[in-house]
Length: 107
Image (cartoon, rainbow, N blue to C red):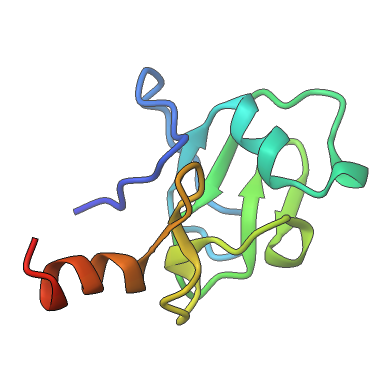
């Protein structure tokens, strides 16, 4: 079962291995990189980058360059053990929010 990732480009099914952990990544849209990478690290081309799907790997995105977890503006939810890291960056929804709504509020 693969990790479902917001911002991944489902139109492109190409997958490439992470240069660090060698697990297959998930292609992401240029817009995702533009929003996630620290501005001073943005490459000239934002095309053909993948998200490393390994929870244990410190690589965030890879393509013609490799970007690590420290190179991004916000944490990647599935790479952290923090229930307050956003799962949905657009709406700011965290694991804690989901647990509260399902387990506590029953909705």
